[in-house]
Length: 321
Image (cartoon, rainbow, N blue to C red; front, side, top):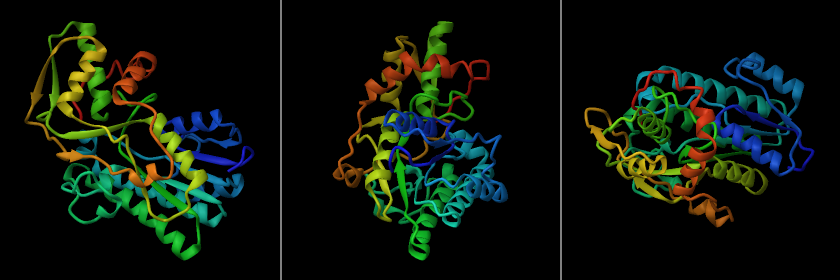
């Protein structure tokens, strides 16, 4: 890429897409093509082809996706598999058809088997069953990853993939019927502080181990790979910092500064028992994350939470992981 390259960021209003746009602009890339889902429904093949034919983007960051936490995945699996397969299929094929120089597909760490050895290496893909609570989403993401590889082999397309761990940051989703665990806990402790509640309820046992990455770090990794990586093997992208859900709740309680008692609702599912990525291949190329978990959550709560939370504050509270 050069500063004049025409770059399409699919999903630019989402947490990941908006972070990529911010980082591109910081690095001097200003020739960006951005369309909202209302302006361009990427599930519509005809509309997607027309867009690529007219705009002729040179580089594509495929960050558009339907995402959500355990409850959203568990109850709306049909939407998660249909929407994601349609979006990625249309964009990847249009990129081939209209001569995109390079495409980066964003997957997810949930593609790996529920009981994969930890930390999870790229080669562990499809060596065991998926986590049942997010199987439709995981299947869709695996299909996108494999599609990029197949298009490389058959058509010579320079399509690459990155598999990030659990994300948080500016633009996060605080609708507790759809959100992931970290923003869900931020909202719950924030509301407990506002309402002076003495308890906060967390889904599950608190024992699952998770890794979290600030979305700005993911954005830097995506642009780094777009400039420096051209192989078919997908690369894991994580912070390398692991924490239990219980310890995460305690950390967020400290950052929000409200000493509510943490109650675990063990009638709710835990999801995967442990999910830590082996990101050594990406690190070996020269990329490193910037934020520690404490620094990242503090940054989000102090600088971004109020604005993002305001979009969801009138919606009903619901625990999610």
